[in-house]
Amino acid sequence: MANPLDTDAGSELFSNYEAELNLVNADLTQKLDSIPSLQGEPRKAAIAQAERALEEAKELLDSMRLEKQNIPQAQKVKINQRFRNYETEVDRSKQKLTGMKDDRSALFGRRYRDEPSSGAADEQVEQRQQLLSGTDRLDRSSGRLRESQRIALETEDIGRNTLADLSRQRETIEHTRGTLLESEGYTDRSNKTLRGMARRMATNKIVTIAIITVLVLLIVAVVVSKFR
Image (cartoon, rainbow, N blue to C red; front, side, top):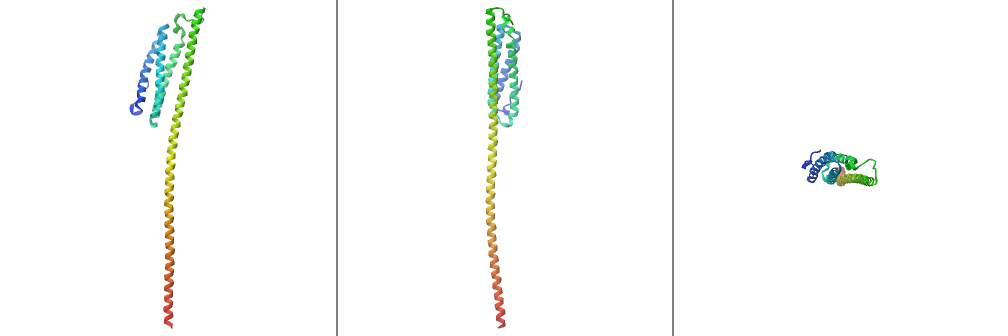
């Protein structure tokens, strides 16, 4: 039997369900162990009690299946393993109970015959066989329904995780886009600065040429004035 889940490893509600399931499983095991020694009506009463305990265990499993979705993703591997152990334990109890229910000679006592001999006995045995057959079909249908529910819940869990991943990827893309826009802004400012520097360099070059030209003209004027 699995140990109860520590409070720091999951939700308190899940821990409560788990502790309650352990008690129900212990009670169910005790009831199943007492059935082989019983016959007739006491055996049927014990089987009915075991069936009620089994249904209670299944209901607790369903509650735990829903509650474990609220447990953080980092802890779900451990939780899922514990949950599967509980499912396996309940399935074993169900199979054991089904085998005891199928033991009709012990269930019906001396009144049961593999080949009934007369009318009233035939009708009674046939009715009980039909009842057991209907119960088996109901159990199988319930099992398929629970399996479908489990698959649907797991699919929903996967979809939720996928949406969370997509949301994180969207945030990353938006952050990257913001960084690119900021980089473009820096590039535009750098281009403006470079164009301003180029204009100043061109202006300085023109001013330098003008100064040189004036100096040359002055030199020429001085030289010409000396030869006159």
